[in-house]
View 1: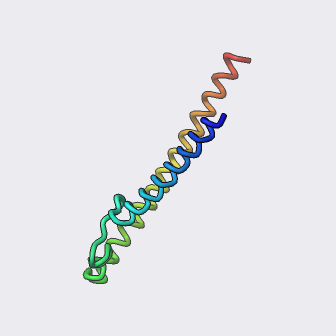
View 2: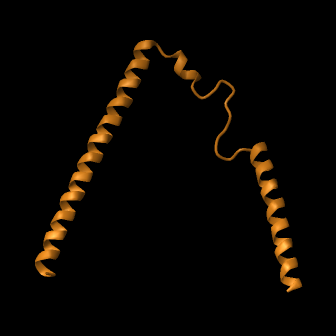
View 3: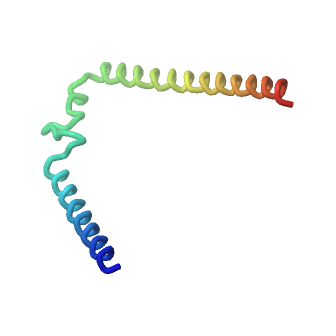
Length: 93
């Protein structure tokens, strides 16, 4: 019993030290993004108002089309489930 308790304590200490080490390493050298000195959206300010409006319109149109497609997919899935339920009702009363 004493040996298993010591092993558990050692595992917890190693896990805690490893977690702190991983956090410090991630703060020093981030793996999920790179920092750019001018910021990520610095290029946006260089565009004219017309170009910004065109980008905004294109993104909004793409979002609207994605919403329409998602609704159509949901409708198709619902119709499929209704058909499956009817088939099951016919063959498995």
